[in-house]
Amino acid sequence: MPRTARKKSKSGIYHIMLRGINRQTIFEDEEDRFKFIDTLRHYKQECEYNIFAYCLMDNHIHLVIKEGKDPLEKLMKRIGVSYVYWYNWKYKRSGHLFQDRYKSEVIEDDRYLLEVIRYIHQNPLQAEMITSNGEYRWSSYAEYTWRHSNIVDTNFILEMFSRNNETARDLFIEYMGRMSDSKKEFNLERTNRLTDEEAKEIIKNVIDNLATTQLQSMEKEKRDELLRKLKAIEGLSIRQIARIIGLNFNVVAKT
Image (tube, rainbow, N blue to C red; front, side, top):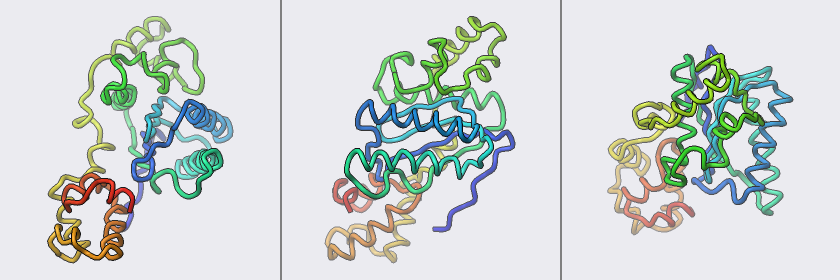
């Protein structure tokens, strides 16, 4: 399927998501997370971009950044290539680690910027990994609340709440504590995910209108070829493919 051109942000600010290929884990331990943060820091200095939020989950990454002297595509390529090179060296592997195209969403106003940052900080909470925002170590929430900035440009966001630092932090914490409805608020998560009805139509087209269950008894070589085509379609998840076709999740994931 042809790729659509990315929308350009007039403000230069984007919500970025990087996901592990086939949703695989991209951070095995603390060292991996420290390395990725160091990579962000290195290119922040070199490319002069701003970072307003981040969250490192096990198999995906959220970033809110403002372009600097390099365009977004170049910046994300440099960050991705640098981390993957190190990760492959460490784990004695080769090949891709991230899905081949990061997702990006433009942010043009302050209200939406704050909503996106709140959504990102609440990712571990929504995943039931923690019971309160302050418990998660691998997001920028700590940089806003511990009064110590590591790689995040916190002042830009905090000044939206108050010119007084203490008041701004208190208001920020209160705002971050309000639960957001991610399904309603964020196009990045919503528009790139297909409904089962949409997925069924795409699958039928790829397999030349065969009954989806026919893949279960199809010759393995032919079946795997079709599964690889389906997995390459943006928005079509492995779980959806397995469910609609009636194959085991692991069979689809390992193809």
